[in-house]
Image 1 (cartoon, rainbow, N blue to C red):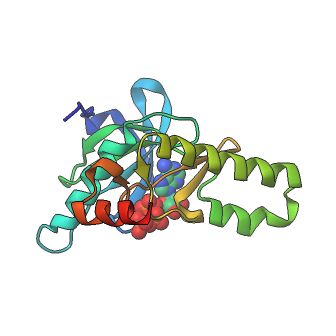
Image 2: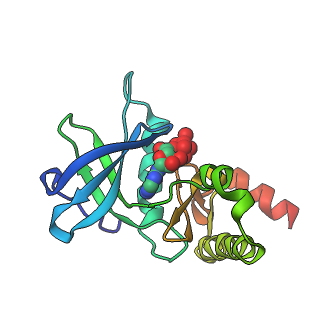
Image 3: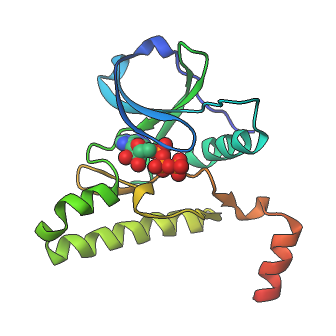
Length: 175
Ligand SMILES: Nc1ncnc2c1ncn2[C@@H]1O[C@H](COP(=O)(O)OP(=O)(O)OP(=O)(O)O)[C@@H](O)[C@H]1O
């Protein structure tokens, strides 16, 4: 397996909660070395180790190593003071597309809406060119950073070559 950066938790300062999802909470931090704002997304379990959640998390890590301007950047992983692993991600300063549209839809111009559609299509094209299907694409999994849309949350994604024989057979049967 290719290398995933391990980052020291002490390098991150001033946490502020920005959201929560299936894996746990998401915090905004300052990455002191680079004076960069990043998002730390944690992997938390209330009960015993859940194999499916872990597999989803590892899958998300592997897929996020790829870099594209319409895909949220993944810098590495860190372990927080409670012992939980966190993904260190590019911080999207305008949050998710669903909240953004709820707040701004009436103000948006057509050229901006068309540009949004184009950026989502470009992000998807990049994923598909890399044989990745997202499988959970919706407006909360699209983040906005400096007016640019970035596809996030690959927990349910699958790389086509990792699909089971059964799924492959179905795909082939359909082609
Ligand atoms: N990199 C980021 N930059 C800024 N905000 C983020 C970032 N990642 C997540 N968020 C915010 O935190 C919320 C929760 O994110 P998360 O990916 O954990 O869950 P989700 O996509 O809403 O749910 P689920 O994990 O169940 O699919 C997002 O909807 C978004 O508003």
